[in-house]
Image (cartoon, rainbow, N blue to C red; front, side, top):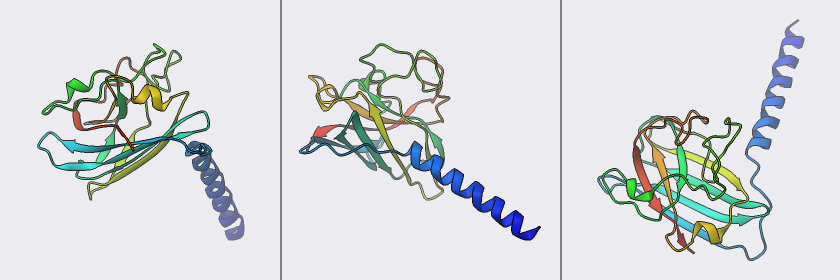
Length: 178
């Protein structure tokens, strides 16, 4: 019985590991692919982390290393304007949505191109996130008015249009070409 229990636990762990691997698929690097970086700040000007967007096959890989963010789940999105004026960062505009879809990966009419999964932040104020935005391009990210990445105060419900009920904007960074 003990062996069967351990075998079951091992099988479940392997299955969960396979799910995580699929969900965190990062795309194949594009030879000579462009990249852009955003340095995030809080409303008080404190450093809040760094995001990098890199061209990969079929889209853009966006990675975020956040710091000085309250513990818990936070919605993270690419926003349509490259401005991050404190204190509320509303100058970043709405979510990046060139395909005119609705918000959220769980919305049958979604998602926006800038919709990302929630990020978990630990008690140390640090969190990481990595995702491929299918169909996204560096040209679109760095268009005439640029783009920003925003961390929201709460978790994104991944379905409510236009912003997933993720609350206020607590950190923001403007993407700049590398």
